[in-house]
Image (cartoon, rainbow, N blue to C red; front, top):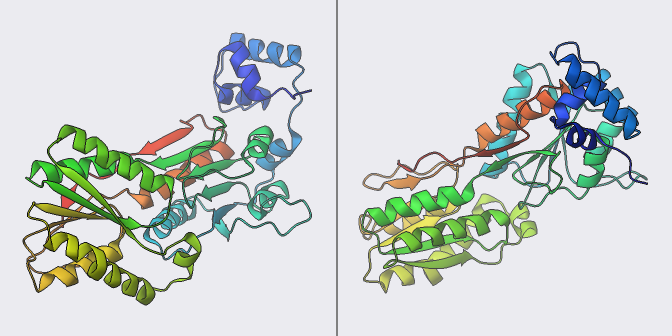
Length: 345
């Protein structure tokens, strides 16, 4: 038999699940009409609702520490930016953070970050997705109403909060800016890693081509980079791979094209090596763009068009959303952050 949840009561009464939570937990800070309160309590009784004592005890016994689940290296601009935003927001509210990976080291077989909440070592979890996929324990999180926020992915369970970045819009806007300036060919250079983020970006570039049907798009991948390879590489290794890709693929494509070409890069390290390669040849012939929060090199005579996903802001929103759950505040459960408008640097 399936246990009745707060969401079931909310659907029966026609109110939000947070309103139901306020009523059942007798939250004195929220003003709820007696009619709504009575309807919620009646529906809870009729549906045989049994309170989740694990979640309830978590709200009462605070550790003022948040688990941040992160599998990849924090030196990557995306993960570093998100983590920095989380840290800043938590520190401002008097919370600390416990950085964890996705592994399971306990007999329960739960990921360590999930056990940290269930065992009351942390007050909640911010899960930072590596490739756009949600955590494997989403159903358990939803069933137990645990304080949990997914970053950079959207779980199927609507009750699990998430903060996402609009990668598709960022690629669309930067491509339209370039095509509107007279570019006739887009060369998109990205890591050879199949992630949802890259799928969204390519979809955005293809949308731009529908608005500029005479233009073309060519995809170039930085080879041999799986997630494992990327996490083990240092910057010098990645520089070598970028330079090899430039010599074998990017530069020949630029040299053989009579069109007005723009090279759109997914990573800042690509821009650095690309600028170095073009600086002593024809730096003004090609336009260069970046779809990342990475720092870009300042080279005389060369401008970089950037569309930044605002990863630090995303981290701050994750922390705000999780603390709102812990404090039982009624705020939007799903947040999608637009990128900054394309700007030349």
